[in-house]
Length: 177
Image (cartoon, rainbow, N blue to C red; front, side, top):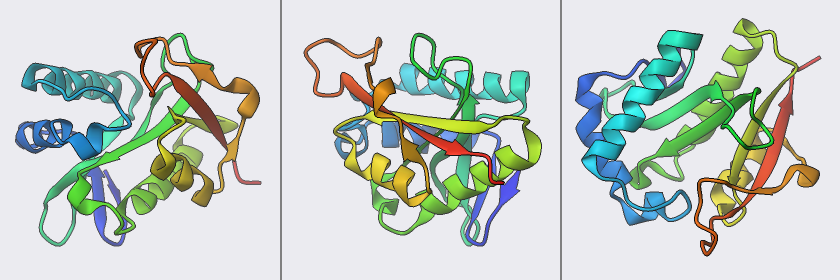
């Protein structure tokens, strides 16, 4: 569990399934991530993320607001996606309910996840990817001090060829000196 001033990043629990599914059905949230997800798909994603926690000791953790224990989304670390330029590396990522955007929660959770990586993993860098059109996400990457690696831009293999989400960009955070 990771605690910040306002947030707790923690393992997923059964109570997270319904609010996560609602988030994955929100057209605003999914606009730069892909199609709206069925309950089966959102549950499968939670199961996959829980598997990462069990296998590696980290995942995209559930985010809970400390003051009221409300589920806000996820943030954390996982192995880089297969068939992408970050395969075999550590990836940072986040997804928050649209009602929680603009409050600094994503930055707070992402910085805490990077700090956790530097304290617990022996990696030189943490990577991030997003659809080129996801301005909010790559803006956060830049606010976190990550740098763009334009030479690693790629078309995501899990995105349909005719989608605006196909072109992806890559960012890197180097271990602090």
